[in-house]
Image 1 (cartoon, rainbow, N blue to C red):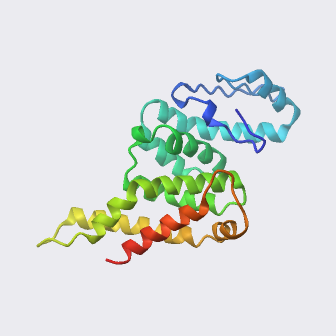
Image 2 (image 1 turned 180 degrees about the vertical axis):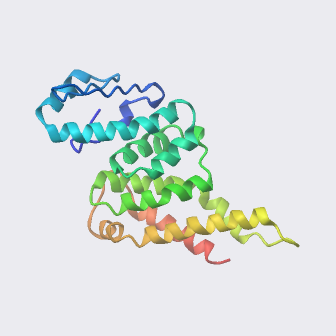
Image 3 (image 1 turned 30 degrees about the vertical axis):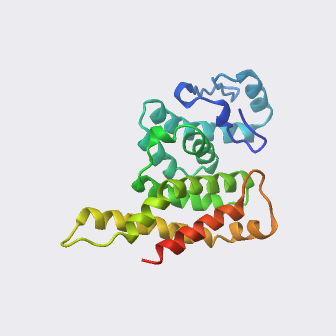
Length: 220
């Protein structure tokens, strides 16, 4: 359930059936109920007070998001993830809900993409490879979803009169374009692109697609 960095492995957890039970007693123990072996986790926690503190904080952060998710409030769960300051929680939630399995449920909209993009950039600027990789893959998911619609919308000629709906949509798309420009300039991303390979992540292809997207948008 947890990797060596203290992150949940949500590939092994079904958020729809997740049951988090956070209890404290005089011995400062915590019980975690899931389909994995909670006894092993509790034994680990007893040996390291700092680990206990980190896990309590992380479980509390994930619990709020997962409760919304289990109730089918996918947009609210995404919004809550965007507000979270714990990149470990965000990392695991994005990996599970956005990249891996439930994209069709969430039906990501431009407003949600704008809301979570600052967190994505924070993850890409993080020194930890696991957060960097999830940040890139999440941004790539957004690019795959919105790239062509944004390019098509930007090149569409204006019709006569004022179209407030189109103007609002274009303004949101411009924000997403600007976020991709900021992402592209990330020092850590550029450094990894030149000097470091991240397992199962083709940074050159990602940057190539980002550059193509930005160049197409700047034509209009």
